[in-house]
Length: 235
Image (tube, rainbow, N blue to C red; front, top):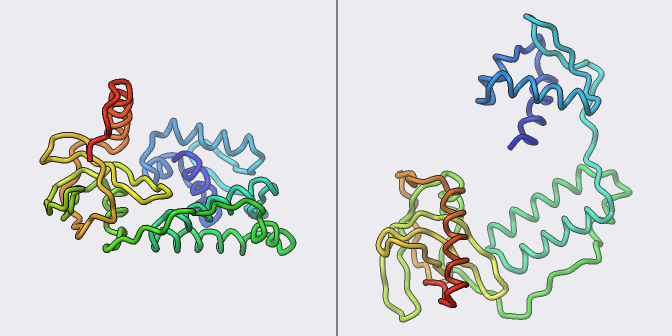
């Protein structure tokens, strides 16, 4: 993402002991030199003191330091609400990840702002019993990030045990459970697999032959078509 790249450019220039050329930045972030030029101009426009000299490279003023994280009260409330939503609907590892992220944000805040985060007045209660998974979803999340296929050992709604090779697209978190949206090679179509019915998940070394963003766009079109037809989502 561009925002992440801009932050990393500033961090890299802070650490560099000598000027860094546009070509070096281009190679480091796998973008064109023209994109580097635009990124530097964007950073300079926000007041970040980057100096550039043709044939020499870019340098960051030595007395510049990244400002601490600053949030408005409303933003802190939104962050805590997000963490509470995760805690009420996600699996154990994702809940821990959200708690760790909030802890890092808390430590980065000035001391007089930490109470605003901890005592945010927005909540996300759960009224249905928690859904327990029999497997660890960490390999599934890893496969999603790396765009790898996975093998599922799965018990369907009829109680039948099946094995599927699928292309994972997204995990949906609902009050009544969690579902993996994927392209199923066996059925040659999009399917939703409830995580509490998964008996085993094995990440394959094979990459999905289509980018996840493209699959997600196709799935959204598929859902829209099914809604127009009045058909239930396949499972």
